[in-house]
Image 1 (spheres, rainbow, N blue to C red):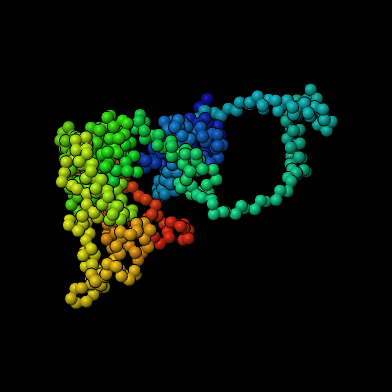
Image 2: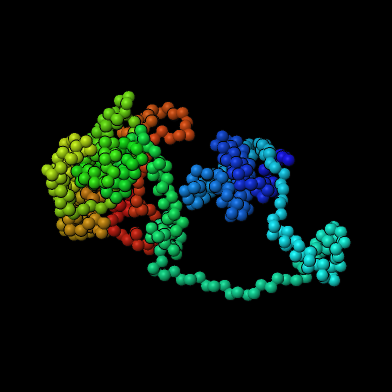
Length: 501
């Protein structure tokens, strides 16, 4: 038998959660989520799901997110918490007029309690016990109503006349935190048992990370027909991101300061034959403005060739390139020499992957010969304007020595990596290049490529859509994060120019 119930009170919601199966609860939560999206009044069920037992809550999460439940319990739990949390937030911020609306009734089955085998066994044990007790005066012919009444009175007497014996257990003092203890990189709780694969993560976060990674692998992620641009994709995160996109079927353009070394790394992959035709590598040094805008033009041209209609469409932009530290001039020269060797040794093997251009890697991006995004002279002009320096236009920065007083000099960074330099050791050029690469270049790429990602620069709003037209991922590092503890070792006064980005 079905009857109507309105979930507008704590009692109604708690009865619904107790009597209904996980599928019915999940359907109601989905209906409430849709009501929030449509600007209607949802039920109050989300406010009381905390009363569910852990087992039943897990079953509700499985019914709520059936597609991802098979991969990881962590992802399923996160999605379940996200849906419930969004409904709660909507209820909290509703207008007064919206609160006065009437909730629709919910058709539910009349609750039926089916005793388990254990319940029957317990009942028989109790009846057998009280039958042999003189104080109850119960026999085999005593009516059931009298037995129930006697048991209820016995329960009242027991609860009022006797107290449960609870032994006194001293409270254990909190264990002191030793220096060897670490926090999980994701959840920031103390790391008691590290994940077997990710030593910096706890086990739940590690499992969540693995499950999320599996969701972005073929066949779970299909990107056939999609295009992507990944900057700084020669090594590390950018390299593996581009590989994941290629193996999922996407056509990928990557940028690198050392394009031939990048090509060597990609073509060394065992499955390179499957996707090398969909990979394009462009040489660009983001410390020079010319390279940035030249990259934009090359990307537009490649996208037009890939597009059947000849228009060009970019589906994914990953701003991964970053200037975290400045290598010494000697190391940059060695990398440039390696590029020249690869040019001579592999002049034909990289054909089709490398985009033909006049780009050549240069020490410090060649900012001495080409135009950087921000010049040191421009910085000096800003300083002069700000502090109203001498009338003849000479600024104190212009007269700084190359090697002199460490507190004021523009240092030559060739002797120490900028990652280990303190504030007074970092040259102005490093500060400029870090902010150029980390901040200005992503802004330029988004500005120039946004028209190819399904939007325009016009002020007229586009029609709303539940499906994103494209995706922009701005990769960030932990250097720019605020620390909870002022004594954190991560904010130790070194590489200040990247800590500020």
